[in-house]
Image (cartoon, rainbow, N blue to C red; front, side):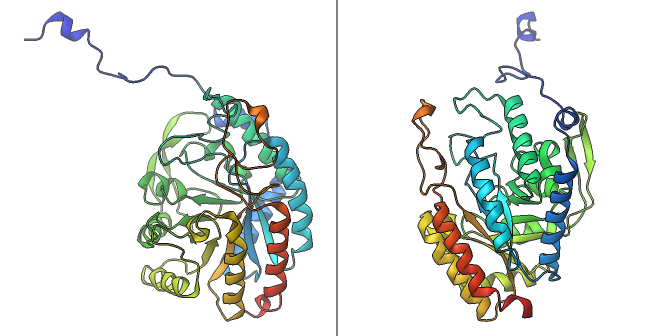
Length: 360
């Protein structure tokens, strides 16, 4: 028989320190509404990527930008430069800016602008969501379609209406929660192969995301709801290498094509020039891009896009407690290719494939 004292011992939320109410998606969208220009940019971006995946648009699409956004001013400067470059090469390459706010951590570390906008472990997520939505609005109003990684399953309700392409990272491609979420995303979504380099989890994810699901999620008015999705027909694979090494070369791409065909999923392939494909050396990315161009010139028909980690300045830096010590325009997460090298790589890519793509 239990004693009265036993009943007084907490058994619920034992390790929870506090619940902090959060702005609802509807409230944030009312505060920072989608403008007509941004609406057009998003629609045009999504439709163009869909047309490329369908083969109606013969161009490549390239998702390029910082590994993560930590400085709004630097993001704007990068975007202004990228918008000008995008117009220069738009006959061959459709540019989408990489605008990543959430960072999956292998152990611990800075979790990104949404989770910790002040970069001091204060985790002012209210502020982070507002900063993220405002930046996406501004970039879309510059005419730049945006891409991000969908990491927290609730975040898309706050910003998905401003996203033209989403990624599911190597660590979460195997997650049922992320597959279900992706089946309801409004934009094309790229699934990265697993961190071990295998294609199995990506193929399984693409099979899962094509059909509708019922799952728990957040409604626009902030209620926990049963969400019924229709399925996403524009899921595709992103080859990013793995523990065994790179997987961007002709042999690896052919193997990926075979596995996609066996799985009866989209045979369209995007190459991530960073991560394990460059051994995390940002300055090896142009080598990957050049190899992809050669494959296309040699008859490849499956590669439809590239991802490039790029910033105003090359390399990366450690996050310090004194934020004034940070170097402007340099990544605080993975190393990036500097702007000048990024421009040269994209111009070279355009020159290499511009005469081949129309006849693919």
